[in-house]
Image (cartoon, rainbow, N blue to C red):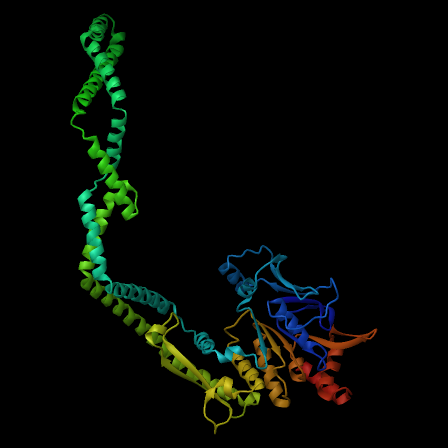
Amino acid sequence: MLVSLEIKNFLLIKKISINFINGFNAFTGETGAGKSIIIEGLKLALGGKNQTNLNLKENEISSIKAVFEINNLIKKNLDELNLIIEDDYLIVERQINSNQKSKLLVNGEIKPLNNIKGILKNVIEFQENFEQQELFDNKYFLKFIDNIGGIKKDDLKSYFEKFKDSKNIYQAHLDNEKNINEKLEILKIKNNKIKILNPTKNEYEELLNKRNLNKNIQKYSDISNEIKKSISIYNSNDNLNLIEKNLYKLEDINQEYSHISQKFASLILDINELINDLENKFNSVDYDEINFEEIDEKIYQYQQLSKFFEVNPENLFSIKEEILIEIESLENFDKEKKNLFNKYTNDLNNYQKEALKISNLRKKESKKISENINKQLPIVNIEQGQIIFKFSEKDEKDYNSHGYDELDVLFRTNKNSDFSSIKKVASGGELSRLLLIIKSLSANNDKDLTLIFDEVDSGLSGKIASNVSEKIDNISKKNQVIAITHSPQVASKANKHWKIEKVIKNDEMTSEIFELNDESRVNEIASLISGAKITETAKKVASDLLQN
C-alpha cells in the first residue's frame, strides 16, 4: 500500500506530508484548492510526464516522494525485474530542477522509468474522468471475466506452447521446401569434395607428426643409431644375467635375498621387453618408403578444405557424417513434412479443444456479469445503461496463451439506441461509474491494490451518491482507496479524512492540507452539504452520515 506522500515546491504546494492508512482515505476542499495537484504530484513521482512549468527559482528543486510498503504484489514485480531491495519499504522519488530536468530515484538510487513502471504495475490504479483506459481495452474485460469466474488457464498455456512450437517447426520446414533442390545440389558438391580427401579420425595429427619427422630426419637418424649401438653392446654384454645367477645362489644360502632376486629378475624382463619394442619400432620405419611430398600435399588439402567448411582440420572427419545425414533428411523431405504436419495438427486440435472449453466458461460467466452490471447501472445514475459481451473466434495466427476468444464489449446508455463501443457512447462521469461497478465486482478477487478515485462522484447527489459511496467503501475492505470527492456521502465513509485549502501569506497563494478530527470532520461534511454557510441542520445530517 501507499504509506506516505511528501511534496515540496510543486505548483501551489510548498511542503506537505501525508501519512495514508490501509482502507479508505478521503480528500475534500473547494474547487481549485489543490486536491488534484496531489494526484498530479503522485503521478509524476511514479514516472508520469511533467506537462507543467513549475516556475522554480534558480537552484530550487521540486521533489515528490512516495513510500510504499513492499507487499506480495511488489515483491513479485521486483523478482521479475531481478531487482533486490533489502528494506521493507519502496521509496520512489521524482526530483525536478529549475531547468525542468528531472530524475527518478528508487530507495536513493537513480533508476530508469521502465523500472518504476515495472515495479508498480498492477499495484496502483488511477480512476479519473475520461482516463478509464481499461474500459477501452477488451483484453482487460477478458481478464476481468476470468478473474471473477475463477477460470484457470494453466492447461491452455501448456497446449498453446506445444502448438506454437510444432507450428513454427512445420513452417520452417515448409520455408526450406523452396530451396530444397538448391540445398541438395550444394550438399552433394560438398560431399564429393570431402569424399576425395576422405578424412579419418586422428589422420591430420598423424600427418603433422610425419612432417615434423621429415624436418628432423637427420637428428632422428643419429639418435636412433646411437640407441641401436647401445642396445648391441647391451646384448653382447652378459653382466646383468651374471648378477641374476649370483643372486639366485645367495638366495639359496640366505632367504633374505629372495625379494631382491625376484625384483632384479623382473627388472631384467622389463628392460628386455623395452629393448625389443625399440628394435621393432626402429625396424618398422623405412624412410625410403615415406613419401614426404605426398604428406605435405595431403596436409595442404586438409587445410584448404577446412577453410571451405569453416572447421578446424582435425574435425573434418566429423563433417562427412553430418553431410550424409542432411542429404538423407532432404531426400526424405516429404516424409518428414508429413510427420511434422501430423504433429502440428494434433497439437492444434488439443489447443482448440481446451480453448473451446475456456471459451464456453467465459460465455457462461460473462452472461452473469453483464446481468449483474446492468442491474447496478441505474443505481449509479445510468438509468437505461446496458452492457453486453460478444465473443468470436480469432484467426489461427492470432491464437495465444489466453485462448482464441475475440471479445467485443458493447454499451449503450439509452434502450432506443444501438450498442456501440464504450468509448463512443459513454461520458466521462459514466465511464467512472461503470468502472466503479466493475471494481466493486472484482473487490473480492483484488487484494493489496491502491486505487485512486478523482471525483468519480462528480455531479451526483442523494441516493445515487450514497450508492457510489457504498461501492467505494466495499472496495476499500481489501484494498487501499484514496478518493478526492465533493460528495458528503463519499467523504463520510472514509477511515481518514483530509481537507485541502488555499492559503494566502505575504501575497503568496499556497495549498495546505489538514487532517480532520471528529469535530472538524462534521463541519467539513456539513459544508459539502450546505455550502459556505454551515447550518445546524447540515451539521446534524453530517453527524448522522458519519455515525452510519
